[in-house]
Length: 375
Image (cartoon, rainbow, N blue to C red; front, side, top):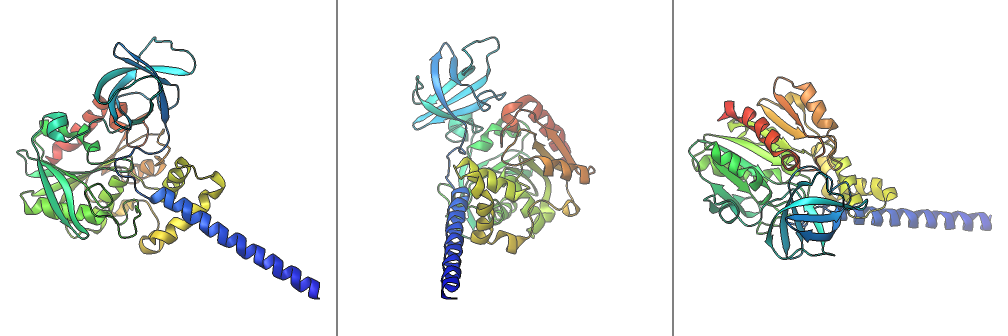
């Protein structure tokens, strides 16, 4: 009996120890997935520069470096813009040649480790695009939120909000288009961004708490001249737009939603973020459960996704099958459920948050058709 008791006690201790270890591992993995890194590209897609010459750059061959379109190329102290893959170039089986559009700052040379990012411009709308703007502070529940305001003639404002791995600089890719159509733009920095208050727990909530900062931006826009607003978000910024429409007392002043790469399957995105930051696959389910516990998302807000029945305004979703961080299945389902309101613009070959980058002309034409009745 003593031996059996001792064995049972040892087994129980082992199981408790394993359970405690699993909790610690899960919390560490969740923290890795949700801890914001303002202004830094999402992990993954790191490349080496092989050579730079004659307006071309040769990079490590990978899924990222082969993507169609125009991207930012970043490294510490370096920012450049690269265009499409150069047709007919043959750098060998391990490399790819892209057009080098410009080097904003720093120097690119062989051996430099770089990342592709959908954030093409750096600086501010005036220095990067030649567009006049004002730096404004928006009163938010946690403190002042930095934003850029670009004035224009219309009284419908577009409020832009970036997503994972981005900053206020990301929406600059569509600012020339919006400016040509005389739409004022309010480009928001929110909790966790550089210059904005930190989230109370230091974690990102994938839009589920951050939407309140977007609600503050809506209030600001209406106070300073907007009659109606269009919410335009990328990634978790798109989730913020959906949540603001569902929950804001000012939702009746929202005339449309533009959702680029929306995060509609929270668990899939959590797994993707954790994996991109080096969390082993076997630990990913623990990371999801721990994230729910750390943030209280599941208990506080119920399941992720969008309720088709709550939509009452036109919605444009830009998404595609190659987004591995926010699967496009839920976007297709939402469009199928509400064909009366939702337009799905499919972009092939585009990574997360990079629908414009992969096909700027097609993207802006879809945007023009959607926005014209709302102006």
